[in-house]
Amino acid sequence: MSKDMSHLGGWIDDPKAVEEAMKTLPFPVVGDCNQAIKDTGRGKTVLLYKYVEEILGGFNVRRQAIGDCVSFGSAGAIDCLKAFEIKRLGQSEEWVAETSTEDIYGGSRVVVGNGRLGNGDGSLGVWAAKWVSEYGTLVRKDYGEFDLTTYSGPRAKSWGYRGFPKNEVMKYCKEYPVQTVSRVSTYEEARDLLANGYPVTIAGTLGFSNIRDEDGFSRPSGSWAHMMFLAAVDDVGVDCKGGRHRPGVLVINSWGKWNGGPKRLGQPDGSFWISPEDLNRYFRNGDCWVYSDFKGYESKKINTWII
Image (cartoon, rainbow, N blue to C red; front, side, top):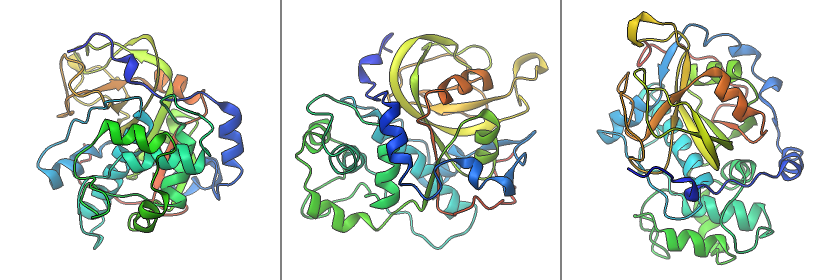
């Protein structure tokens, strides 16, 4: 277990670029369309990662090879969304494979970002959100013209440095689009979204300890330029030691089994809980996004994997 994995970040802090991209989104902020689910997450515990485990028989702990965390956070969120739709909502969509990352990385940098980042690693959360909503995504399979069955850091780097096979990739991307992406700004918004089946990506510079405490939480420690995603909310503090009320959200990282310590609620390896206060510190960076296939964030009556 590495004590410092911050070199595997890759989020670019560019508020001006975020604001520019938001002008092109149909629903740029959650506040525009979340009235139907407002406060529906209060007092709820919802574990979206359990739906992925149902489909895959476990939770795949992904690990980056370069600074492409933005694509990993995006792809992980999409997988939670797909799994929820299939297992909880009973949609007819077939699970083909996990969402691939190299196309999101290359598409966000080269197509959405117009290659302005040059040869350095990294991307923006909003660029990934625009890519998956306007162009779609791919899955881990062999497309004939290119094989995405297994993650490749060198391919991600090549596709992100103007080596993106634009026409070949884009003709397949419409298979799995995300219909709506919107910026999330508060713990309360994230709580309600997660409680209704909508995963949230988070990006910022606040780092966390690689040791979880007795409740599965990690404390802020150091800094990293990084994007991850949220796959659960516990607005009550279920299963905390000593019966304490300790609400929080579960963060899924993309550094493999980089941390250790106690777990609760069957959380996956490499994950950690954080407090509402720490989550709000991430939201101050302004590059955190909810992914949804349903415009308007319609309220859903969930009774599976709710505690």
